[in-house]
Length: 127
Image 1 (cartoon, rainbow, N blue to C red):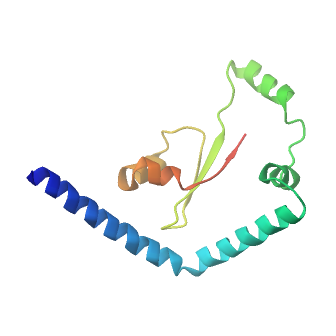
Image 2 (cartoon, rainbow, N blue to C red):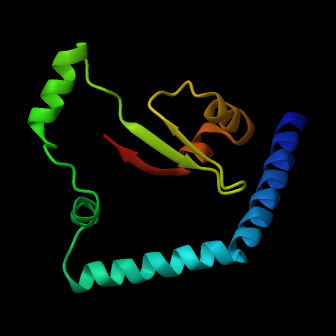
Image 3 (cartoon, helix red, strand yellow):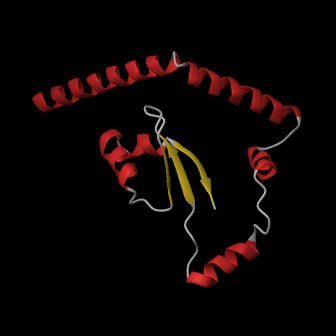
Protein backbone atom coordinates (compact mmCIF):
# COMPACT_ATOMS: atom_id res chain seq x y z
CA UNK A 1 0.00 0.00 0.00
CA UNK A 2 2.76 2.46 0.88
CA UNK A 3 4.50 1.82 -2.44
CA UNK A 4 1.30 2.84 -4.23
CA UNK A 5 1.15 6.03 -2.17
CA UNK A 6 4.81 6.68 -2.86
CA UNK A 7 4.25 6.18 -6.58
CA UNK A 8 1.27 8.55 -6.46
CA UNK A 9 3.26 11.24 -4.66
CA UNK A 10 6.15 10.87 -7.10
CA UNK A 11 3.81 11.21 -10.09
CA UNK A 12 2.13 14.19 -8.48
CA UNK A 13 5.53 15.87 -8.10
CA UNK A 14 6.41 15.09 -11.74
CA UNK A 15 3.08 16.54 -12.86
CA UNK A 16 3.76 19.70 -10.86
CA UNK A 17 7.22 20.02 -12.45
CA UNK A 18 5.79 19.46 -15.94
CA UNK A 19 3.13 22.11 -15.31
CA UNK A 20 5.81 24.58 -14.18
CA UNK A 21 7.84 23.83 -17.31
CA UNK A 22 4.74 24.24 -19.49
CA UNK A 23 3.86 27.56 -17.83
CA UNK A 24 7.44 28.78 -18.38
CA UNK A 25 7.33 27.72 -22.05
CA UNK A 26 3.97 29.40 -22.63
CA UNK A 27 5.48 32.72 -21.57
CA UNK A 28 8.58 32.30 -23.75
CA UNK A 29 8.67 34.84 -26.59
CA UNK A 30 10.59 32.39 -28.79
CA UNK A 31 7.76 29.86 -28.50
CA UNK A 32 5.17 32.54 -29.21
CA UNK A 33 7.08 33.55 -32.35
CA UNK A 34 7.40 29.92 -33.51
CA UNK A 35 3.68 29.27 -32.90
CA UNK A 36 2.76 32.42 -34.82
CA UNK A 37 5.02 31.35 -37.71
CA UNK A 38 3.51 27.85 -37.71
CA UNK A 39 -0.06 29.21 -37.75
CA UNK A 40 0.71 31.61 -40.60
CA UNK A 41 2.52 28.89 -42.57
CA UNK A 42 -0.37 26.45 -42.12
CA UNK A 43 -2.85 29.12 -43.24
CA UNK A 44 -0.72 29.82 -46.31
CA UNK A 45 -0.51 26.09 -47.06
CA UNK A 46 -4.31 25.84 -46.85
CA UNK A 47 -4.74 28.90 -49.10
CA UNK A 48 -2.56 27.32 -51.78
CA UNK A 49 -3.68 23.73 -51.09
CA UNK A 50 -0.12 22.51 -50.37
CA UNK A 51 1.00 19.70 -48.07
CA UNK A 52 3.99 19.84 -45.74
CA UNK A 53 5.85 17.42 -48.02
CA UNK A 54 5.23 19.71 -51.02
CA UNK A 55 6.52 22.73 -49.12
CA UNK A 56 9.62 20.84 -47.99
CA UNK A 57 10.28 19.64 -51.54
CA UNK A 58 9.89 23.21 -52.76
CA UNK A 59 12.23 24.69 -50.15
CA UNK A 60 14.80 21.88 -50.18
CA UNK A 61 14.91 20.28 -53.63
CA UNK A 62 17.38 17.45 -53.90
CA UNK A 63 18.40 16.72 -57.46
CA UNK A 64 18.35 13.02 -58.26
CA UNK A 65 16.43 12.11 -55.13
CA UNK A 66 14.32 9.06 -55.63
CA UNK A 67 14.73 5.35 -56.20
CA UNK A 68 17.91 5.74 -58.30
CA UNK A 69 19.87 7.59 -55.59
CA UNK A 70 18.68 5.22 -52.86
CA UNK A 71 19.74 2.27 -54.98
CA UNK A 72 23.22 3.70 -55.60
CA UNK A 73 23.71 4.44 -51.90
CA UNK A 74 22.77 0.89 -51.01
CA UNK A 75 24.98 -0.73 -53.64
CA UNK A 76 28.13 1.23 -52.72
CA UNK A 77 28.26 0.21 -49.05
CA UNK A 78 26.03 -2.83 -48.99
CA UNK A 79 23.35 -1.06 -47.00
CA UNK A 80 21.46 2.19 -47.07
CA UNK A 81 22.84 5.21 -45.33
CA UNK A 82 20.94 6.03 -42.15
CA UNK A 83 18.80 9.13 -42.12
CA UNK A 84 20.12 12.23 -40.36
CA UNK A 85 17.99 13.09 -37.34
CA UNK A 86 18.14 16.60 -35.97
CA UNK A 87 17.11 17.23 -32.36
CA UNK A 88 16.85 20.59 -30.58
CA UNK A 89 16.81 20.81 -26.80
CA UNK A 90 14.10 23.38 -25.96
CA UNK A 91 15.70 24.06 -22.57
CA UNK A 92 19.16 25.01 -23.87
CA UNK A 93 18.62 25.57 -27.60
CA UNK A 94 21.41 23.05 -28.29
CA UNK A 95 21.09 21.12 -31.57
CA UNK A 96 22.29 17.56 -32.16
CA UNK A 97 22.54 15.96 -35.62
CA UNK A 98 23.04 12.19 -35.67
CA UNK A 99 22.74 9.21 -37.97
CA UNK A 100 22.76 6.72 -35.10
CA UNK A 101 21.22 6.35 -31.67
CA UNK A 102 24.52 6.17 -29.84
CA UNK A 103 25.38 9.89 -29.93
CA UNK A 104 26.91 11.08 -26.63
CA UNK A 105 24.85 14.25 -26.08
CA UNK A 106 21.63 12.55 -27.21
CA UNK A 107 22.25 9.69 -24.77
CA UNK A 108 22.85 12.16 -21.93
CA UNK A 109 19.60 13.96 -22.76
CA UNK A 110 17.69 10.66 -22.79
CA UNK A 111 19.20 9.68 -19.43
CA UNK A 112 18.23 13.05 -17.95
CA UNK A 113 14.83 13.69 -19.56
CA UNK A 114 13.66 10.27 -20.77
CA UNK A 115 13.61 8.79 -24.26
CA UNK A 116 10.03 9.82 -25.11
CA UNK A 117 10.67 13.45 -24.13
CA UNK A 118 13.87 13.65 -26.17
CA UNK A 119 12.19 12.01 -29.18
CA UNK A 120 9.58 14.78 -29.02
CA UNK A 121 12.47 17.24 -29.60
CA UNK A 122 13.05 15.77 -33.08
CA UNK A 123 13.06 18.76 -35.43
CA UNK A 124 13.45 16.97 -38.77
CA UNK A 125 14.81 13.92 -40.55
CA UNK A 126 17.00 14.21 -43.66
CA UNK A 127 18.13 11.58 -46.14
